[in-house]
Amino acid sequence: MAAQSFLVDFCDRWFDTDFALRPSSDYQCPINVFDEWLQQQSQSDLPDEGYTQHCGAATSVPVAEGNFDACIIAWSQSIGERSILQENGVVRIIVTSTNFAAPWFSSMEVLGKEWRDSEKWLETDRLHAPEGVNRMYHTSSNFWRYDTNERLLQTAYGAGAIALSFAAVILLVSSRSFTLTLFSVLSIGYVLIATIACLVGLGWSLGFLEAVCLAILIGISCDFVIHFSHAYAMHPGQQARDIRTKFALIHMGPSVLAAAATTMAGAIIMLFTEILFFGKFAVVLFMTIVHSTIGSFFVFLTITDCIGPSDPTKGVDYIVNKIRQWFAAKCSKSVSLREQDKT
View 1 (cartoon, rainbow, N blue to C red):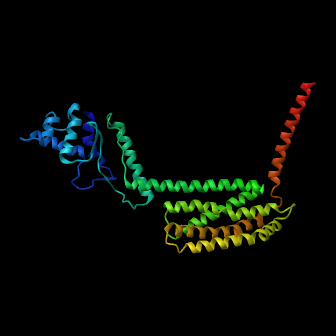
View 2 (view 1 turned 180 degrees about the vertical axis):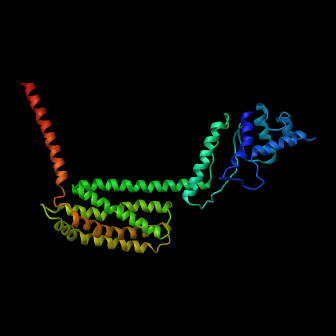
View 3 (view 1 turned 90 degrees about the horizontal axis):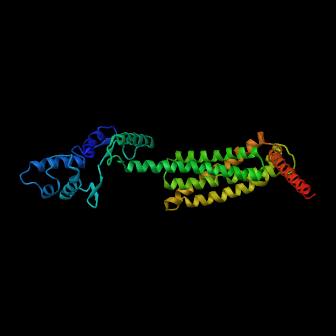
């Protein structure tokens, strides 16, 4: 009985908020329409058959618990009301329609605030709801769009973090230099930020295709910088930073430029395709290669020429040697103990 009274009052409270709007000026929630029907039937000289058979002469909500399910199901079937969902004669769900204040095309900030406000209101209302009606929830295509975009944004951030992390590990292993790894990650970060900024400048917004393209972008953006970093570190002997930078530029520069030219040529060809994904991917690829070239030639090599290490592998080699000495000492000590046990 308390649950029915709660449902009757729910609509007025819900539509009294700033975010929930009635679908039409004369809209009423199903439970309230049912309540009016009971009042009309109880006063009618010729009540409906469903009322007389299932409602136990109820004059309004609340209806006797033993009659409620059968009565409201009979009412819904008599008028073709599809918001009452039942299973084996027991009402499981009552659907209430709502228009939310923020339009579908609103910004993610506006939709996010509306989602949080409505969810907070429902959480509070659930605490005071009787058992059986305390699990209400709301859904909307607005919030589907908001949630999808939030997941895409989180995926883009996660993909960027994963790519930078793996790139850092590969750079550290290949160059054996903490300093070059830091410089490379900064250069790759420039490529990502500059490319995304260009796409935003072109009027792009984050969607499924854009998210896929960005995930591919993150992998492509690492290549050129990694090649220069490896070449810088592999110059034999202890050399000055300008000599190492020149060595990397002379030995890797032509190959990097050739790779950039061929990739950009492929991207230009894809710009004229009719399939939407290929066109968007071409733009992303073109921008990525442009900024990868700038990031490797002008950002990374400029940093190494100004503050690059003359002996880039010194730190990692020192740590590796210390670890080897520690293992060697442990092994020799273990061998000595076994020989003592034998004697």
